[in-house]
Image (cartoon, rainbow, N blue to C red):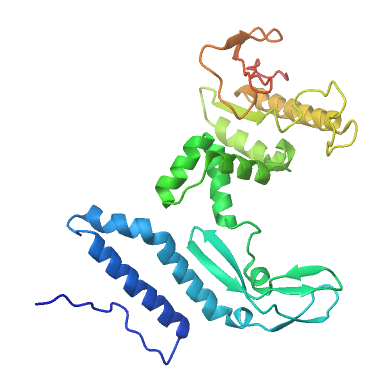
Amino acid sequence: MPAQVIQVFPIDKSVNPWKNELFEFLNVRLDQIAEQSPMGKIEDITGPIFRNKTEILGQIVLGLIKKNHNHLLTQEYCNCPKCGKKLKAWNKKVKRTVESLGGRFDLYRPYFYCKDCSHGFYPLDMALGLAPSPKQYDIQDLEAWLSSELPFKTAAEAFNRCTGDSLSADHMFETANRVGNQLNILDVCPIKDEIERKINELSEGKFRRPVMMMAIDGAHAPTRRQTGPDPPGSKHPPRRADERHRGVRFFFAWFLSRVYSVGLFCGVSTKSTCSAPAGTWATNRRSGSRSPKFHSESHAVYWGEPGRVL
């Protein structure tokens, strides 16, 4: 009996054009997957699906965009958001690639340009809240989280193995730095009441003292006093770094005194994002303790005495 192609998704051209386009794509792609894989074991089924999931999910997302924002995809006129002038869309729609955890797809949308304001814009992009780069905010959020938990190369490998999409270690590094560029310890640290409550929870009913550790990246917070002039192009005005340095020291002073007063042992470190090479241990002259010495940007980790501000 000759092989027959069976449509998994029935197509009715009279209703839901966006759904018909999606079903046509799925019918073709599923036929290709079935023909190219033996489909004997579970890995033969899940493997091709996983490798094609970015495009499959992307077409589903694109179909829902066509359903909910069709008027913006076919828009011919729009008012300038700055001056209110009525504008006509360019003759040809502009293509952009959208990549998200929900899939990758190409989006063709109308472009408007106001000559009076020298301002160009895409109403659909604004309505969807798209990121300026092809990789959307959900990917950037995952990149920043993985980069904060793992070395950049390992984070890139973890992203690839879990999503099937590729990102370089350099891209992970740039995204993590861009997300956290405007933050310091005083912005992200819990407020005083939250720290007090956590300390009380950890110390209540404990015979042995719990160990609390706090780390701060010395490359992004002024844990050391500024000794020279600001570098060319510095964003901070003169003495701004010294003021922030004192603010961080005051925070450490309060934090360590509160932790030490309830009997919690605390080690304090100022830490760079790189890893210390094996065997590069040095003596910290201030505390007399041994600490790993960092060769990148002259950062070092200092393990201080309990209750002492370095």
